Image 1 (cartoon, rainbow, N blue to C red):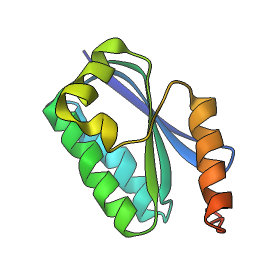
Image 2 (image 1 turned 120 degrees about the vertical axis):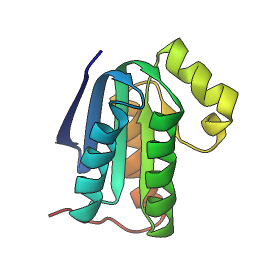
Image 3 (image 1 turned 90 degrees about the vertical axis):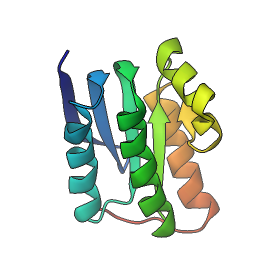
Image 4 (image 1 turned 180 degrees about the vertical axis):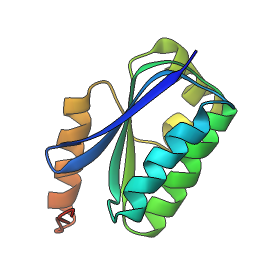
Length: 126
């Protein structure tokens, strides 16, 4: 199955929306989309995986690598999904304790805004 990846702005936060399956063959597409936003200086990202039906260790590796970079640069990476299959992978690997996981994009955007307010910073994105 193919992977579709789109990027939008939602409430001042960059959202990378993926649909399909994230595996060894399609994960580079997600990695490239995330890296493009990071290179552009966007450090608060949301990975909307609502349309993802499957994610393997390669996909998780892409997300973990970007999370590490973002957190060391005072950024964030939030995940949106309600898929039991995807949530189970995060649970089994313990990554549900590492990533902020939200049921909806609205929840993730609200949490991102609250984080900016809480820490007294609000970065504007180019």
